[in-house]
Image 1 (tube, rainbow, N blue to C red):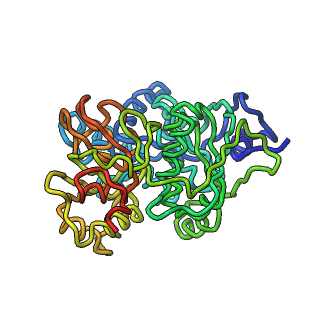
Image 2 (spheres, rainbow, N blue to C red; image 1 turned 90 degrees about the vertical axis):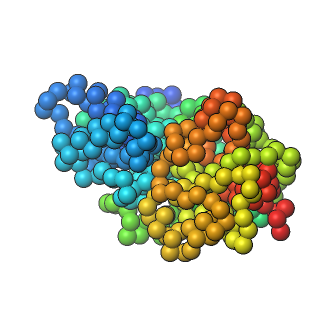
Length: 420
């Protein structure tokens, strides 16, 4: 019997010829990442390894992003702890404010992510890296500290699910819509501790940015990992960017999947997840009577240059509705600079939007756009749980960047095709 991508990567990193779902393996990890929130407890755990212990420099990546620039004294102390840890051990992979951005996009841009690699991060959306053919998953701060010290971690080999999306996507339908459509179908626990592999002509036609959106939200279906087989788009992106050598991994033709789900691309519309679960989905066209207070474009899900471009295309020559505030947050400094060069920032500002430097900010209800009681936002983020972006009586509707921009213009949730 053949093996899936997850099984092959974990087997190789564990030094085994083959492994099976449910098996526990100890595997060599390529990189471990922590952010300013998860870093502090990881550093405390690391102390338990003793004074002689030192983080493995080449494997440890530190990226402050959740509460930076610092919003208050506690967040300043968190960031300070990370800065001091990096300096104490002379760690080279530390990305200070102004030189990095949202952790998952930084990991990809800076060449840590590549096909066939095993990467863990103390953040649930670490699964984003599967868009490049890696096995990547979120872990706790304790586990992250262990990888810093030992370079290894134990894993339970997940069962695998196969998702096939065939055909041509409609206008303004993006990777975000594909994953929301799938989560709406299988539910937020439909892939619980399973690896989700994505195939089909609709998937291969996607840009890398859209693929990252899909892999990013695998966790919202309970997935352990979300993986897309690497192709020339990935290899081209990595040229001159990737750190070290890598070896692509593909599933065998006779690999065993627990279940296969098949979708017709033309049946996937611009999709919105209503409160309070990513699985509570509806076509954007059916929600036109829902007014909004805020439109948020950004996050590790949809803060890339391609996302900003499509939003700017819709906003060009238009104004944000007078009853709406729009916040645009490029995912990294690299994206921010590119948006400036392309004139996108000017389009946003002229439309009446607020443009920020890279930060997680309001996505997690941190700052830079927190919602008040009774307020409603449409956001390109990944979670819409109760109180996710602010007050427990606020509401978040998840959507792709085109829907966010169109909704900002109309002051209500809008299918972008309505503006044509």
